[in-house]
Picture 1 (cartoon, rainbow, N blue to C red):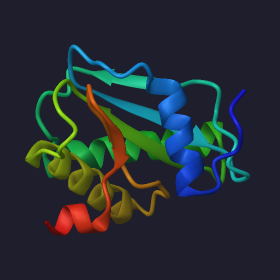
Picture 2 (cartoon, one colour):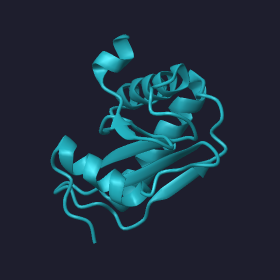
Picture 3 (tube, rainbow, N blue to C red):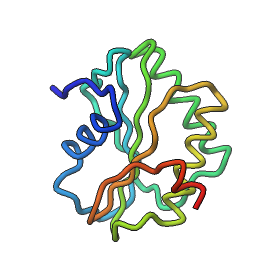
Picture 4 (cartoon, rainbow, N blue to C red):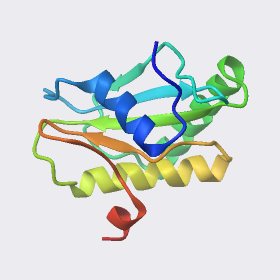
Length: 134
């Protein structure tokens, strides 16, 4: 059982516990639902074969599906997402496109979500607003 996720530090701690040891053979998107009190739902979902950032339509579809599941399973909760990929620690243009597409789709449907995180072979970190502006 994980501690409640109430801060960015808590969320990073959660993702580190779930992803370490780092090292990935392929690209995936990971999703966890967080209860209103921050308690992580005990099931972590992996979406495999995420080689390309989603189109706006794909991101909107994903946001819609995840929103329906969240409303049904963890009413009043929020989502946390992490992109895992092989490679170095520097954010890539694909990392930024993933984070932007997901954030925009979630905002469009009013879906509460935490900042997207990226885990590579070398590091795990949030994608911040400053990262997206770069």
